[in-house]
Length: 380
Image (cartoon, rainbow, N blue to C red; front, side):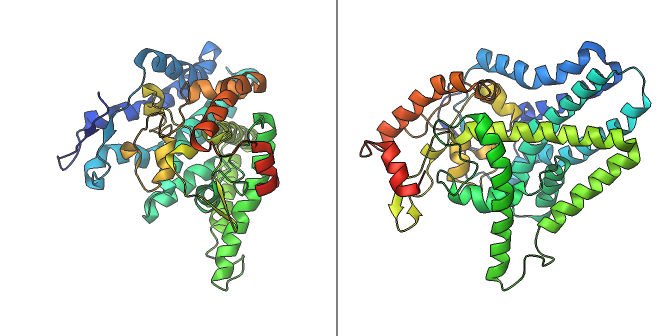
């Protein structure tokens, strides 16, 4: 389709409009087949999630069409439904396999490990992405479902970090999740694991303090995060013993890794201009990397339209707009390819540093020496 806005005049968009986003359901039978059959099937979910969609991106190219951003929620029934049905499906699959794997004898240790990674690919590349969509909504049900998905990845604090820290401070030194220019993923990863946990807890503590409440007050969502995570670990032990706990923790580790490598890609090297007195310019589409690659946006429910997500965080995923290169920096490939290159710092810098430099020259030509600017303004 063209770049023109598509208007939704009907009361409900037909299922065919949402059908490409339902492709993520294919991951469930692939992971189950890996567990039930073993052998070469154990690598199929991993290859499908990233290799297949990277290949489809190359074949299908870019999709620069936009739905009317004023489309009502009632018209998005089939788009919303995939995010609502996913949490119980993922829960049933993960804990069903935690019960099944210790009771079967056709999987060796390496096969169990790869099946577990495949589970983590599912809970990370689908579950966490859907949790991200759900946590941005105002109604209690969707936020609860988002928390359940994040706690299945043992990363419940992500909601607090994402909403209270990342969206407020993106593109500044106050945001742990904004990858610094020249920072490798392997430096970013341990830093963000440590700092995002601390910053999210502080954000909730400070919010309670403004209400004259202590951090241990029952309204602190960390009690929910800790309670759900403990419940899931106990359930894993009850269903699969210590092997079940190990499987659950390993799949969560794989899911977290995928989340943070995507976070690394999304804002690498992009900064908001410092205005003085502790203030920064407003968040604009140019402060996030944008990607309009068709297939990976189906799989990741438009997460790659990240420029618009930060510009208008309350937009549901089908309404996220894409931008051309004059308004937002463009990734050369979709996330499946970019996250692969992010694991190789030298190759990543060769690909991305010239793009960051071009972005700086385009949007902030008045800053000649970025090293001096960062040191003077931010102390970094």
